[in-house]
Length: 231
Image (cartoon, rainbow, N blue to C red; front, side):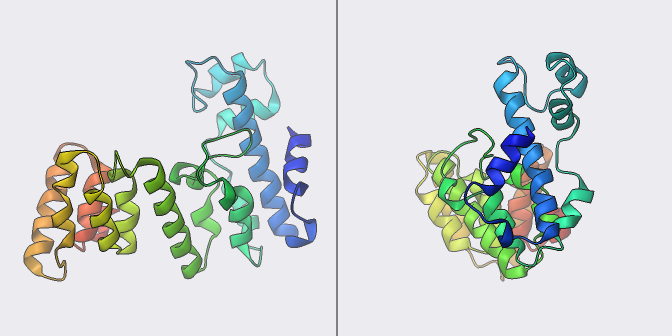
């Protein structure tokens, strides 16, 4: 695993591009990604990469790096702290998830660019610049739309709602191949500065919450301006 880690770090980026904190984080995060990739390669088809660590230990015969990834569902907070010392930490994001691979699914050590994988590497703990976070959201919205927009617009709706891009949100639902989903599009064209529209969004959110559709409820809570409820 360590040989793969160092090969991946230096394959297209000079070490001078990162300071010592950035390199420490990158080594830890790459080790985590490579170990998870090995689990995906070696585990039986019915075994998830997020399976119980004890089961993974048995499967991998106690391999340190594999049990390391199985026991953790994310890069350690202590390792993420090193990324805070990296001056241009947006570079770390591009190194972990190269933009040229945005349309790809997970392959080898390169995890797919997705919200679950961003959470696993702790991106929101160390990406501090507000403009960089917004660019990350826009990139995530584009990627999710390419993957799911035509058939499952709710997959990218939360990102666009959080960014306040309601015209894009309306467009995503208009293009959906599913007729019931297309019928929702006009709702997103409303002016949510108007109280009655915010109230309507809140009612929709509560209805979805009762159905345990928590992510979808969060979209409408955001439209209603109820940020704490969305969280």
